[in-house]
Image (cartoon, rainbow, N blue to C red; front, side, top):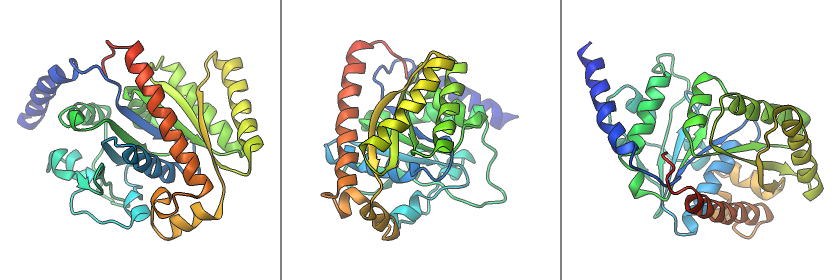
Length: 280
């Protein structure tokens, strides 16, 4: 009981800080299903923003199914679950990956993984505000799908980037994510990245099918942020456990990811100018 009371007191203290922050910095990268390349995009997007001189914190929030460490061939003694278990503070589990890119790793396959509730997610977001001034953007690599906890995380984020692919099943699952966010009256800005495209027509068709459904049935529509080609260079970077934008920066897909990063920075600047009083 004392521990619970202590946590509530801490939440109240941190809420004071949360309520004075106005810039939009928190980005959730999500997908309606697994296999769309969500983590691949999140990591390369984060590195691309870092390459633009932005200070980035990338958090693996794919609870108990984390693989950012595998993608990057990195290990850390400090994991997100230790924060959830209140054994370490958020600052203590930050991993310095490169000059402008910091990471928080998750872990996978634990039978005793701590139960994550809406209260814990609230505590996580409030704790982010203790470090948010150090970063230009904080990117959350979400769990695939949109269960109650993931949806709560998406709603609390400033931006949601939905990663999909041209397959009809992936488009339908992306539609479900937009539907759930709309049903909760989420004020987060929604964007779509179409990954694994054979060509521009492939991407345009996928996004057109998605927006046709969202406009007709939901009266809502995400914005198109960009597409990424399906090519051997991306596949090779995953096998080599290297970031594509670092291993092969001149490849077609790497250039597309960097273009998406540039476009997002411009969108964010406009959003912060037009919504100066927003509370994150």
